[in-house]
Amino acid sequence: MKRDRVRSRFALIVVVACAGFFPLHAQEDCKATLSSQLRGTHEKDTVVRHVFKVDVSTSEACAEIDFVLSTTEQLPSGETKVFETPGKVRLRSGSTSQKLNYDLKKANKLVEWKIEQRRCTRCQP
Image: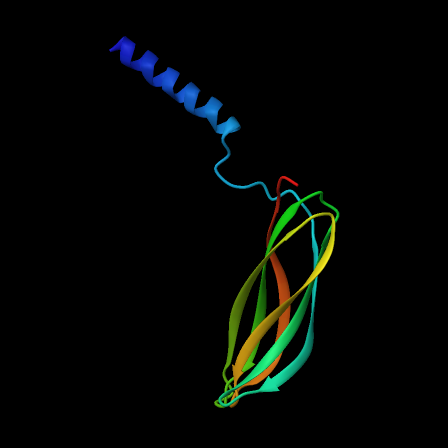
């Protein structure tokens, strides 16, 4: 009985000690700046394609940035819905631009959009 307690405590100590060496989630310890602009629209058969320019910059030596473009559409009924279009960029100390297309049904109206950073993780350059 006493041996089982000792083994249990030892196992717990090993698990806690290893947790420091093997983090369960990626560290989100970097910073990035994001902005977006609507660069144009193109009519197609059933949709209007909205072309967004997403600018990303960081001073990190290497960073992986996950972001999402949230768009709010107004439906013909007056109801509004929010849609999310994900994006990702790997960047080395500097800035980059990325084109992001969003198709909107012709009957709907684009009310607003915003770009949000979901995660910024340092990587190896």
